[in-house]
Amino acid sequence: MLFTPVHAIATPRPTLLFALASDDLEEVRRVLESGEARPNDDVGPQSALAFTLANDKLKNKMAMVKLLLAYGADASALRDAEEEESQERPGKRGSRPMSKLLEDADPATRYYIERANSPQTRRASALIHRSFFRPLTRVRYDLVGQDRVLEQLFRVLSMPTVAPIVVLLCGPSGHGKSLLARKFGSLLDVPTHTVNMTTLQNTRDIWKSHSIDPHEEPSDRSLKDFLMENEGKRCVVVLDEIEKAQDEKILSSLLMPWEYGRCSFEAGHRHVDVSKVIWLGTSNIGHDLVFEHQDHRPAPETQLSREEYIDLMALLRPRVSERLGASLLSRVTAVLPFVAFTTDEKMAIAAEALYALAGDDVTTMPPATRDLIVRTSLSSYIPSEGARSLYRAVSTQLLDTI
Ligand SMILES: Nc1ncnc2c1ncn2[C@@H]1O[C@H](COP(=O)(O)OP(=O)(O)O)[C@@H](O)[C@H]1O
Ligand SMILES: [Mg+2]
Image (tube, rainbow, N blue to C red; front, side, top):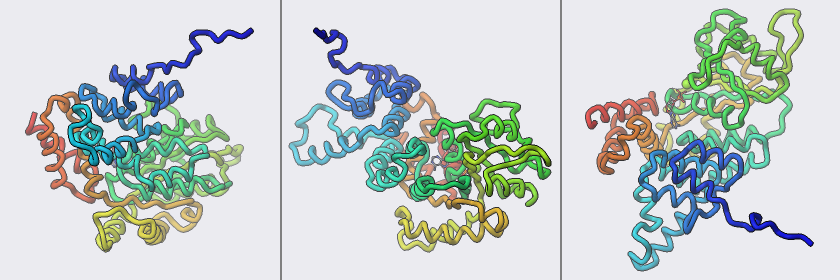
């Protein structure tokens, strides 16, 4: 006869609630990543998302909301409740109805919740739903805007290919090119090596270069060491500011690995298999094209349509070819232009800037002050500097406020 042990009787473990309530971001991440708790498990009478949104004492509130959304927390419940409430008598529910939660949220949190709810988000994610690249869909909660870039990137990654994957992220400064490149490897949990292309002098310098990402631990490892260590494995090489390489010979080192997925670091030496490397280049090439295209759009305040984005890609590719050379470009899988931000996107970035720069002071700041700082910073926005101009504007205002 079999007995069911008492502890096997299903009581949901309060791990997620516990981690959320103790404001422990790393623990929330661990619990979600390990699958110990799922983001849509109810924690008490409400969802984890509603619990977090309602809890004003949490210092890591915004980050935790983003994390819950990134791991698939269902935000539609907040929306549905809003509709239901509008049909009911006001004041029927508790002191803080769902719609109030959204209304009170800062512009960044609101932006990310809207984004999680959008059908376009779901359609684009479906492209890589069954692939190794699926965790990349979480980048939506690190990067504001650039929905068409992500959609196209997911399309490219969903295509079966034997050739190495080479993607160039192009366009104006401060629009998230390096940010996306940096998150790519960390979301996929594969190693990343970042080359600062501006510092290379000679043809073979690229293989000797050390990784420059300030978010990685500094190491003495060269790109050559990195590629040998990760031979035949998935990994990411970021070539930051690729068009600023001193001369074309430096780029010619990339022809062989991009064409054949093999590379030899010294003449006569054996070939190393780099076929699984994902090469991500960033560059400002075509930033003027992006703004010209933006100026000619019939509805510049809206997001680009897919057709508009396809037009822009077609305009950009020849420009990049001119700069980097046609033989190199013929080996590039996709050239993705980054585009101008909408007002909602700028508000979201400014709100994130405020939370990042003000630290704990934000929790004690009157909501009206927070609002004012975010709105005022938008008037100092400089398109050619993108998010960086918003960070600067918020920082200047904080100096005057605190
Ligand atoms: N799309 C974006 N969403 C959120 N923050 C952004 C975005 N673009 C830029 N930022 C902010 O500005 C900083 C610089 O962006 P970065 O990606 O380095 O710009 P670039 O396009 O010049 O490579 C980032 O670290 C981030 O804080
Ligand atoms: Mg950059």
